Amino acid sequence: MFFLRIRCNNCPKSVRTEEFQAKYPNADLSKLTQQEREGVERYYLNSESLAQIAADWGKSREWVRQVLARALQR
Image (cartoon, rainbow, N blue to C red; front, side, top):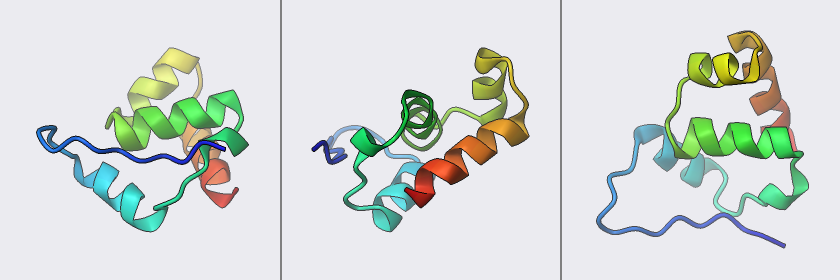
């Protein structure tokens, strides 16, 4: 099992990353599909926008938002 733990004392953390870690302290990314995992990592951990992810995937921002919402329910 893979539990997400980010530890970097010198790295600036985005508000989005801090909120994700506070809300999901033991997030198990291994339970997610590849696309859900990529979306969570890019949006919450790398602070990419929904528009950036959607453009890369060739989908709408709403579609990406739905993928992220589904991932967080697992």
